[in-house]
Length: 130
Image (cartoon, rainbow, N blue to C red):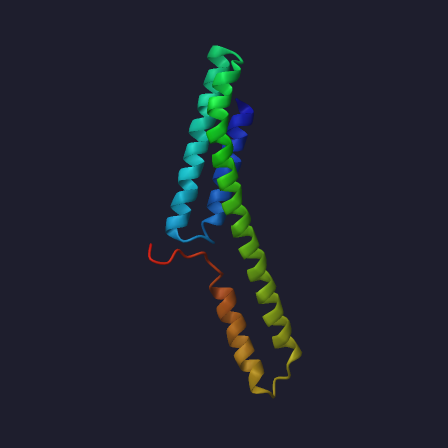
């Protein structure tokens, strides 16, 4: 039961961290996936506790559990790739700002662009849903 609670805490923490990246609609989908995951984990735990290791019951509940897990990790990996790409863009713009001389007008525009990119991190938006 302790492992189950640890897994639920990790899933909840991942959703909270990724809430900054995803828009509200996608964030709510992530929350729904976490709720489904908790329900399937509870069903699997209760089946194992009360019915033993019946293979057919475990297979019936394991398939949706695997599907939800794969969907959740796919969304999390997409968010992580977006975060890494955003950090690379910020680093490249910051390096270009420091490399340009202050006498050139490009330095001021690069500095403004760097400030704007750092102030508003990249987000996933679902067009037509918000």
